Amino acid sequence: AGPTATATAAPNGVATTAGTDGTDGTDGPYADRGSPGQGSPSASNRAALAAAAKVSRSEVIARAQSWVGIGLKYSWNTTYEGYRTDCSGFASMAWKLGKPGLDTTSFGPAGVTVNIGKGELKPGDALLNKAAGANGHIVLFDKWVDGSQGSYWGYEFSGSGMHHRQIPYPYFSGHGTFVPVRNVAVIDDGPTLPPLDLSDSSKLPGGTLVREPGGSMAVAAGGALLPFGSMAELTEAGYANRMYYNVGSGYIGSASHQPVSGTLIRSGPSPSVYVTAGGGRVVFRDEADLAEARYDMSRVVVVPSSFVASLPEGVAEGSLIRSGPESTVYVTINGARIPFLDEAELAQAGYDIGRTVVVPLSYLSTLHTGATNGTLIRVGPDPTVYVTIDGARVPFKDADELAAAGYDITRTAVVPVSFMSGLSQRLPDGTLIRTGSEPTVYVTVNGARVPFNDADELAVAGYDITRTIKIPTSYLNTLPQTIPDATLIRTGDNASVYVTAGGARIPFTTETELTQAGYDITHTVKIPTTHMNTLPTEPADGTLVRTGPDPTVYLLAGGAKLTVPTVTDLTDAGYDITHTVTTPTTWTNQLPTTPRNGTLVRGPGTTQTWLVTNATRTPTTPTTDAHIVPLTAATLAA
Image (cartoon, rainbow, N blue to C red; front, side):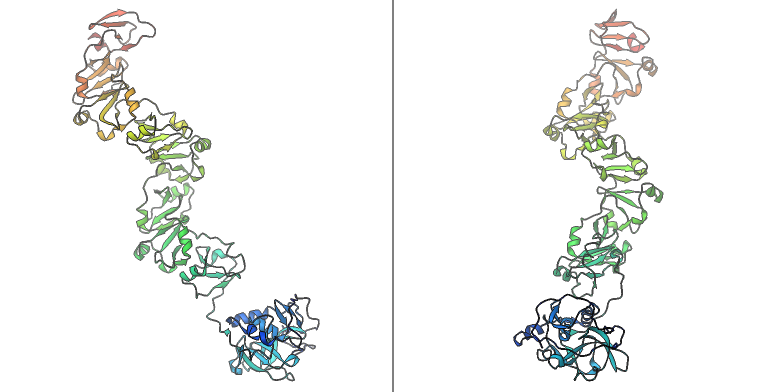
C-alpha cells in the first residue's frame, strides 16, 4: 500500500477497459475483480477519519451512485472530492467518514463497522475483506438480485473503475474471505415522502417543506414559499422533525413569497388563525368565527412567525371581501368597505369576483361604510378621478392637477357606479379645504369658501387643521367667497348665532327665537372671526325678509322694511319670493318703515327715479353711478 494521497484528481476520462462499468448487470469479458491496492491511513489519524455523523441508508446509496459512470480511475495516490480513488476510499466517501478515508484493515478496529449475518444485510451495508493492500477489498451492498439471495447488486471500485453490478454472494471466488458488515453510523430511513412534482413551486400543497443544499428551508403556503430565518424559527413552527423535499440551490429564492389571498395561516407560538387578504392578514377571533366564514380548519398552514409579523393587519386597498353569512361583495378603500349591487356592477368596475376573500364578520363590521376623506376614486367606465370629502366627491381636471394637489394617481380605487352616484357633488358645511399650491385653509359654508388668516384663528374656531383635505384648484375657484343668505354662522370665541341676509349678519337674541324662525341651531357653521367682522350689520337694499311667526314679506330699502302686499307685486318688480330670508323677530320689528333720507328708488316698468326725503319722494335725475333701489308698485305708492 502507498502513502495517503492529498492531491485532488478530477475525473479524467472514462476507464479504458471495455465493458467494465457493470451498469448492465454483467461482468463484461475484461472486468477485473478485487483490489489492485489501496492507501492506508496513519495509526494516529484513524480515530479522526473514523468519526462520522449519522447517515441514512438512502444517502449512502446516493453517494455511492454519484461516483458511477463519471470516469474515475483507480489510484490510491490521488483523491476525488477529498477521498482516495480506491476501494476503501470510495466506501469511506459513501459512509461520510473523514477524508481521505480508512482502509480495509481499519474499518473494524476503528469502530466503524461490526459484523452482521447474511440475512441482516440492508442497503448501505458492505461485504468486507479486511486484509491489507491488494489482498483487501470492500463492496457496498445495494440489494439482492432476487429472493434466493444468491447474488446481489453492489457498488465497488476495482482496477478498471467504478461498478454497480451483480456479484455472487459474498464475492467472486478466488479473492479471499468476505464477511457482511454494518457501519454503526448508518441508520434506517424513516417514512418516505410521496412523490411530488417540484417543477412549479406555486403548485406545492400547503405545508410542504423544502430544503436547499445549503440548508435553507421554507414551507409552502398559498402558492408561495415562506423561508425560515433560523433553526429556532423552524423548531418554533413545529417542523424540526418533519420530513422535507430536497430542492436545488436558488429554488426558494425564485419562488413567490406572498401567499394568495384567502390562505389560512398561523405562527407556531400562537393559536390565532389568520386569512391573507390583499397583502394583509385578518384574524379570526375563535374557531366558531372561522367556521362562520366557512373555512376548513385543516387547511391552516403553520408559517414562520417572522412572516406573520411582516403582514399588516387588515386588508389592502382594492381588495374584494365578503363575510361567510352574506353574499354581498365589498371593495376595501382606505379603511372602508363599499358594496357592489350585483356581480354585473362588480365586473363593470373591472374586478374579478373569483378573487373575493371571505373574512370574519367581526372584521367586516369594523370597516367604515363610506369612503374616508382624501380617498381617490373613480368608476370603471369613466377615467375621471375624484377625491372624497365628508360624503362628497370633487373631480380633478386631469392627472397634473391631481399631482399638484399632492395625490398619487396609482392609489385610485375603482368603486361601484351606485356608490359614486350616491356621493354629493357639494361639500358639506364645516369642511376644511385647501389646494396643493397654496397653504390657505378655507372652511365651506353653504357652498361658499371662507378663508382663515392662520392656524391660530382656525384653532379658535374649533377646527383641527390636520383634517384639511386638498382639493383641485379648479374646483376651489368655483366656490363663491360670499356666504349665501339664510346661513347660520358664529365664531369660535362667541356663542352668538347670526343668520346671513343680503350679505349682512343678523343676530338672534335667543335659541328660542332661532327655532321660531324655523332654523336648526345644529346647522350653525363656525367661521373665522376676521371674516365675521367684515360682514355688515345691515342687509343690502332689495333684500326680502320675513319673521318666523308672520308670513308678511318685507322689501328692505334705505335701512327700512317696506311691506309687500302680494306675490304678484313682488314678481312684477322682478323679485323672487323664494329668495326671502327669515330673520329674527326682534331685529325685524325694530326696523323703521320709511327709508332714510337720500335713498334713491324707482318703480317697476319706468325710468323715473325718486329721492326720499323726510318720508316723501320727489322726482330726481340720478348720476350714472347712483345706487337705486327697485321698489314694487305697492311699496313705491306707500
